[in-house]
Length: 402
Image (cartoon, rainbow, N blue to C red):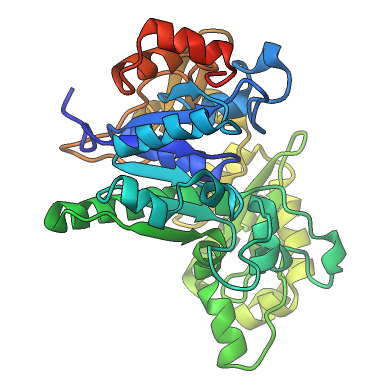
């Protein structure tokens, strides 16, 4: 196995939720040693509150694989001092608590810089560290609401009250871009010897994907409206019901040539071409009737048959896959080795996603299971903090290492 690009880099993780843990996990999968600070006084949102299940939760297994767990009581002065000592020996500190938490612990950038001038601090926040709403507590789905994506993903004419986010894209986007920014800061440090702090706002990272919507407002003077599964540049366009229980295939027809090929397939099955659909503009104007015409064909066929038939004539189509499809029917993940099996000490064998980018010289990899709560506390206390077994036992009895 080739050497990973971040080997020798040590990351201290003070996080909750998904954004901060994702940032640290990505760094770990490319070679960094990641030390997660936790406490047995309570589990975080992904370990859960039940100590019997701390090491079995699927979300925790996914977000924290390959990391080390160091348990300490940050409410105690001695606990905070131990973490500060760890910060002196780390290259990166990842945090995503509410504003004021690491300040109280003495680990915001001005204080961290005094401890370790070369350390890089990345603060993965919902709304960033400055501005009138910076102190507002957020999580991924709420950020989607603020940046406008939830509204834009709604159905045409629907009330905004019906828009309910089912995903937390900003969390994971913030985590991945946070890791990218850390790599840039490491390059800068290699040139200058100086660390820096990174203000990573999930709101702005997510909103950067909405550029055309901003142009619609600023250039055309129109407030963008939700379109559901529709497009102004393609028709038919959307998810079409297929044969079976809740089976769908997405179809997108962009050009007149694609439309002619698409129609020829449907006509061979016995469907007559409707004159209302002759041009793109007419297809857009009669979308509801067009969708019914398309589903008269897709509804009689397996979703994969629809996809393969249309891809065979160079028309965009893709099955709306469920997890079983990805495991059993679609050969793509298996061919690329994307799904990785891990043996978790308590959760047993699990399957998780692999590394989505492949570097030819320095590929990352899933480096191991998620840590048991406090699994590495003694190891870190001895090797990095130079504590004796007697000192460790005393700190445990005082409620510091807990």
